[in-house]
Image 1 (cartoon, rainbow, N blue to C red):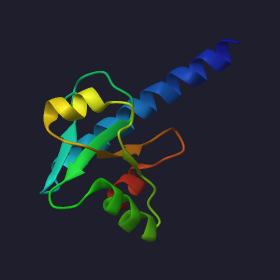
Image 2: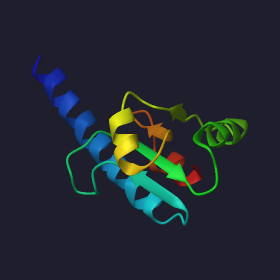
Image 3: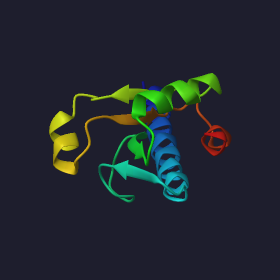
Image 4: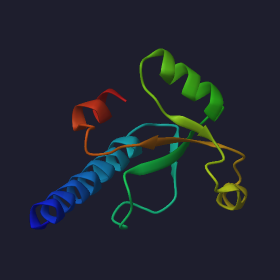
Length: 106
């Protein structure tokens, strides 16, 4: 059981590292607004975002055509969307099987 707990801790740490990397990379993209907690806040490797001039549903379709899977919609956070002035967002989700190279290609 100790090996499982240690493995889960490594997965959690890697997921946190990957999520922070995704946030930093997305901050570099002009026209992309990341929604939710700022970098440095303890959070999962899930990033909701909007792109200037592109509806999230269209964005998810365009990215899908390039082999990149994101979700688009409300994500059960309509109150946050309303508070920030958005109706929908796109969401990228990462886990231990994702890599920084995949984030870079995203």
